Amino acid sequence: MIYQFDEFEIDTRNYQLSNKGKVIDVEPKVFDLLSYLVVNRSKLITRDELFKNIWKGQVVSDTSLSNQIKAVRKVIGDSGRAQLCIKTIHGRGYQFVTGVVEADDQETAASAPVTGNPLEVRSKAPMVAVLPFQNLSSDQEQNYFCEGMSEDITTELSRFADIQVIARHSAFQFVSAAYDIGDLVLQLGVDYVVEGSVRRAGNQVRINAQLIETRSQNHVWAERYDFPLEDIFEIQDDIIGTVVSTMTGRIQRIELDRARSRSTENLSAYEHLLRGLSFHKIASSSWPTQDDFARANVEFEKALELDPGLARAHAWRICSLSGVRGC
Image 1 (cartoon, rainbow, N blue to C red):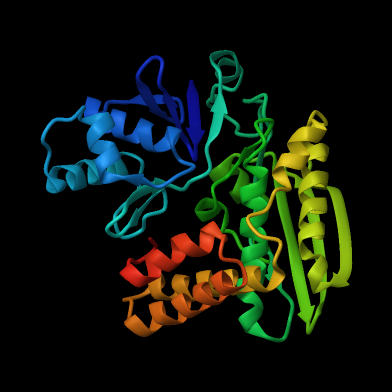
Image 2: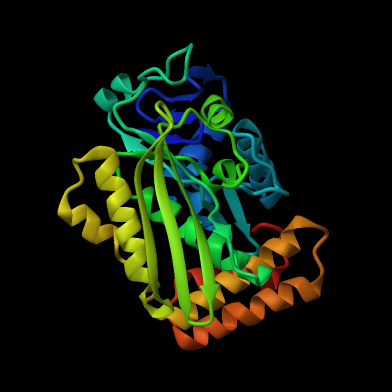
């Protein structure tokens, strides 16, 4: 099986890791550890599970495991401070959090990277970047809501095997109001860009969303939504479904229904989750303080009071309680 994320590709059948098509030499244990985290990215992996499956029951110290995790992060351009790809849940384990696309050998052969002009055809699957939506509200506190919208659209789009989605941390370096399509294509090589804006006033929200084809720089699709806040999930689904069908034209209905499955349908819980993520991001952008993490934890706890089964709130609450930057 082939697994692709950011500019990397892991070929578990041929035991290869490559970056932009160039094979990278890695130690066997580093490759095994990275592969295991990527394959099992849907869940948190405990240290005991890694010892059992990677070291096959050999006696290994926690320090050795930590050093191997550091080596894995280094080879994919991550770090313990940034934790953009591999998050550490203090006292629990690790989880691979960057979006991953799975492909079989035939798909990979058809989508092998090429040198030269990044606008040339290089893949069967179109590549899209979701930029952070602009906050047009007078209240700057609503930035958390706009970023949360963009992150959710990125997450849901990454469920589809028919498209490739640029990781959030790569796409978010381009601000919708100021980016240059030429620079974006040169750096990310994307075929499409999703951008938009959000204006929120009380319980009413206006969202403008558009899909841009980078080759022609034409607006392939654009829509404006005016709706009460409680309809936010329905509007997100509409944006996701339209973007996917416009880009590929081959998405099956069952896949759309699967992508619409949410971790919560409780709007208030969802808002507290986004607020908590916003506070946690503040704590992670500078030297963290207990107050910063405490504010995030309060929001995560409020989300769990409203929806005890909200897995994302549970995971981020643990992260905030442990005081880990980025997590």
